Image (tube, rainbow over all chains, first blue to last red; front, side, top):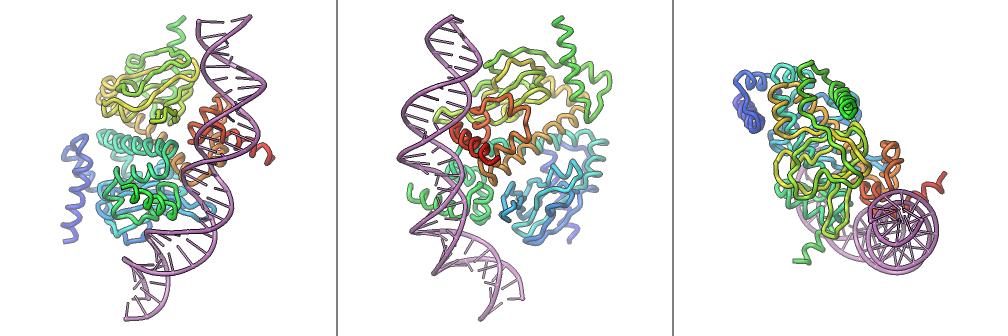
Length: 201
Length: 201
DNA sequence: AAATACCCTTAATATATCTTAAGGGTTCAG
DNA sequence: CTGAACCCTTAAGATATATTAAGGGTATTT
């Protein structure tokens, strides 16, 4: 039964990865072989500040936050990752040096992970995976660039409205404290923003 | 002579592209064939809002800014690109839909460009280019992520100090108005930040 | 089921940043 | 070479956002 579940999870990964460039049987076999399933409890960490990020992680279910902690001890959310999304500290993963971020489960989660050597093996032996992961990163890059534009040009209220519009599923399952940390404002101020928005309607 | 110059420029591109994955002769030949040189005057545009971004651009010399204009008519700098850097509206380039940004030369520039069909041809026929461009995007992604972290966690002063530390060459050749737009503050406030910093020393 | 930790809100006060206006310096285009 | 456009700075007043403190609600853990 556990094995059956795991097979279903890998089908999800496969569907996600074949969307842009369909995979051949041999590629699928390797994919299933090299990705390892792991369950993570709520508040469980898959990466600590100072660790070298050794895995590229696909989220099957549940939700993670990736964040940094500043000198004052405050958390700043860089990214959320829920079902069908990837999460990893790319900077540490590619440099193989200790990173500066945490990746923590906000909800109980199931993930599929591949190690750096195995990913490099895939890149080297099945060129298609280069394209596949290039596109994954490109999409994440475009998302990040939109976020930077918001950060430098929009008010907190605009950013909040944009967030709940762009990620309604996330917005409804995350506590506002976490959203505030992602938007770069305090949760008290987000409270005020929400009140003002409610009065506008 | 113009041809000799152009050959030198393509050598620069080659050096840049072979750094991570050295290229074979055939790959180099294709590279030189598919990249086209272009000169751009100061204030010349290589992309307008509403255009479909048809090229991936490598900057040989000079400097560009990529920016969006908001409803109030204000420019917001998403990115600078000087020698040895890439610039393109990835979102429009990959979706083949009209984009929302401008790319404009801040200084007279020389660039090398490849079109989307030619890049796809390279990807398909020389798998190594997938890796090369994957790494280019990964680096840009990591840079952007650091910028997002700054935006959501640091004061304007901290962001400014970080900018001139991280990009000293850019900082010294850009007007402060452009830097302010990149940092997401007004140029008047940047002026105050600089005065405060000067007094601290 | 109690205890604890977390979450959301409100409000008063403080700080960061913007807006507007103005003047002088520099660079650029005609 | 000269006017126009751009750039930098200053400062006063306005607005956006942070901080602190407090109370009540909800979920998690024991």
